[in-house]
Every structure is written in structure tokens, then in C-alpha cells.
Length: 303
Image (cartoon, rainbow, N blue to C red; front, top):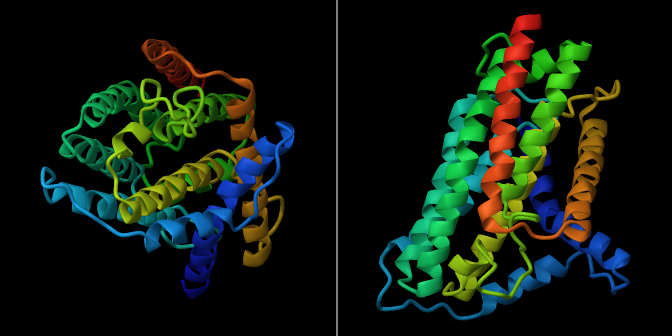
């Protein structure tokens, strides 16, 4: 357990660096100057140094929401094993706790009593409403293929120890679905532009317009950790191959390599794919929903 905690702390320290790696990949291909690997650290320290203030129109929600969101992100990152670990959790529970973070983010946007905060909190709820059914079906899919196990460790062990053409096809479809959920939950392209300054097109950032500097730093840390948590989930449930490595240090280095590769795929979406109109979101997730239903039925009939 002690070694796992050490790897967990190292991963937390690497989260801001992963964020810079993603930005530098885009900067290189766009012909821009690359950033220092510690640029995110500099930005966060600068935000924490600035003064904090509170509007007379806000309630205690504005104070506790950033802390709740950060706490949920930290717990999530700890519960998805980075290397060999005895830690385990129910897959149904972990996704429901994730929605707690989204709810507090929307409450934060509403609590500031501004036009943009309220409007884009409603948009956040709209995105959550169309993503949630697909997420629930994704959970059911993992439970079905792992012989009705809801424990994350049991699902991982089943996927690691079993291989077949049908199972590989099924996991490939689940990988596409999970990656789409990653993009939607983290408000990345094509569902949102995390670097936009246009109030009419942003979703996540619009709820943070009234955020004070230290709270903004907490929100930024939480969003970066949540992104890496989703990447960890893809590695743990989809990309389970350890390539014969058994020692923790080599597994950890392999984990870092996998994270960079998945961030590279994420970079592809942010460079070559344009932002989607919000009324088209439901088309994507309706397609994924129907695709999963067909796949589950096909898997059960041919098992």
C-alpha cells in the first residue's frame, strides 16, 4: 500500500505536466512556441497568490463546491489502480460519485446568479442528461462481459485473462463509447472548446466566469485530475495489456507511456475536428446507445 501511495503522489505531481504535454503537442503542429513543462505549476501558483473575495449574492455553495469537486477528483484518481494494488470499488458506485461533481459544478454556476452561469449550467445539465444513459449502459456492458461482476478489480482480471475475437470486438466498441464519454464529461472537442473565450460557445468555462482566483485554481486542478482519471479508466478497463511486465516501477513507466499516447489521440480531436453544434450532441449519443444495445444482444446470443 505504501508503494502505491507513493506512485499516486507522483501521478498527482505529473498531472499538470501531462496538461502541458497535451498543449505542447498542439503547439508544435501549429507552429507555435512550446511551453515549459512546469508552466501549469507557474499559473496555479500565480492564481493562489491573488486575493480572494466573495460576492454578497452568493451562498455557502460557492465556498464548498470547489472543495467538493477537488475531493471527488482526488478520490477517483486514487481508486483506479495505477500499478498493482488491492484497492477495489464497485463500478456502479464510482460513476454515480462522478455525477456528484457535475451537480456541484452546476450549483456553483447557478449560485453566482449571473446570466451566463445560469444559462450554461442548464447546458451542462443537458449534456449530462444525454451522456448518463450511455454511461449506465456502458456500466451494464462491462458487468455483462465479466459474468455479472460489478467489482472493478474482477472486471479488470476477467478482461486481462480472457481473449477472443468476439470479446475484442466488444471491447473495441466499449472503448469508442468510453472515449466519447471522456470528451463529453471533460468538455473537450468536439463537444466543447476548453480554450475558448466566446461566451456563447463555451459550457464549462462559462460557469467559472465569476470564480475568484484561488477557487479558479482549485477548479482547474480538479478538471485536470478528472481528465487523467478518465484516461486511467481507459487504461484499466480497455488497455489492460501489461506486455509481460511485473515490477511496479516498469508498470508505472508503462502507465505514463499509455497516458501520453491517449493524450496524443485526444490532441488529434482538438486539432483536426471542429466543435459540434450543441443540438447535434444527442445524435452522437443516441448512436452509441443503440450500438451498445445491439452489441450486448449480439454478445449474449453468441456467448
